[in-house]
Length: 495
Ligand code: C2E
Ligand code: CA
Ligand code: CA
Image 1 (cartoon, helix red, strand yellow):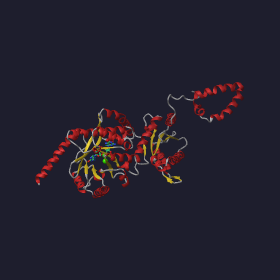
Image 2: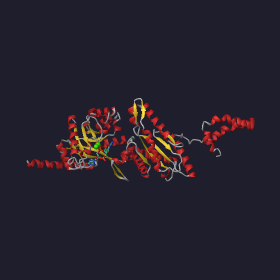
Image 3: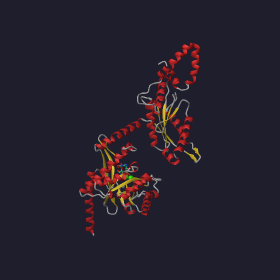
Image 4: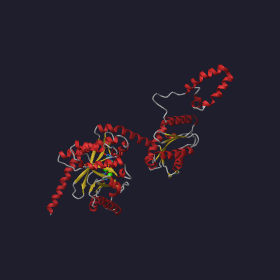
């Protein structure tokens, strides 16, 4: 206990430099006996001071940040003041790596870290965390408040954003910053401060590049919500709560149902029916996306096979595939195997690929996979067309069949001339490239009529039907086809 104040000094290697001086002093005071006593006691003192590590753990960088913040909080408890933690994430790290290569990216990031260190006050410490983000543990300060923390974050962004000069030219780095002030937590601890700053940092990284976010209790609730959804997803699939709903797509020429799109719903026992926006962000980037894809594919093909048996044939089902799934080299074989096991031909499956996935150069493995899927005989729809930057070269390279015109162009297309011009441009592009078209999010009969008039091949939207479970789709289909036959009979009779 008495050694506690000496702990930081004894633990540093610099103390070794003082040992000859210490030995001389002991010899002068206590002679040989003193020297012998010192030789015996020194190793014991070192052992007593070195705090044993808990079994199985090692002092990770995060542990060091937490220890530092804990020490500052202990100081504040005695002397007053406040502290805080900031977490800094480089927004375009992956993009930088692609553009500059790994070694020059490291050079740029190292320059940014050095600049950040230079911009800190003495006593504030900067750490590089295990995931590549940075954490700053502020020293205790009597005046620190949330406003000052925003100013510190802005100052840090400023130094990072100054261009870094490389031989190939200047490079600009953008970072987003999350922070937490010690007074924002009811029970501040080093771990709670770092966790809260990371939650705010993740929130900032999800916003526009270069965002700054202070921690709020709402963020913590949203994070624990996401964690709970992620933790419960796999069991929910096992219990059959994650279900494919289907939304019809019809031909503007014949009015026939030409397909359905499978859209996921989580029929949550406590929270009701969850739309994808409520839980996809929680599982994105994890293996659970593959579980979702497999579940949706199985249910979609099972529905088609079942409807075939009941005489309710639907030509095709469109399934949404994430970029993560499209990167899997096993995907084409898996699709072929699944189609085969349901006794369905490949033309019964449409693969929906987001425009953002084929934007830019796209990935070779994704392009190769889509090529193989198309060669098998499945159709490929380019989803949300018009919202990304897919080039004509990419559209050709990715072996697509159909452009799905995004709802943002379809909305009020009957009333807005700009919308009409955009849709007309997309339709003529599709025609020249030999692609079919489908407008999504069609809500009114007037939008439907105008799209048909402009030459859009297929429509999907609330005006036809909302997404529904397979049982409801069967009922809807029977009544839709009856209405269609009735209209046709009247048409024929009138002639
Ligand atoms: P998306 O692929 O663009 O799907 C169309 C979305 O528009 C669906 O939202 C659908 O319910 C909605 N919608 C359909 N008609 C209308 C309309 O007339 N007006 C309006 N305002 N909206 C309409 P939902 O079901 O909430 O799905 C949202 C997104 O979640 C989908 O957008 C898709 O990107 C993603 N998603 C859904 N299911 C899956 C899935 O199984 N796997 C993957 N990877 N993503 C999925
Ligand atoms: Ca879609
Ligand atoms: Ca879409």
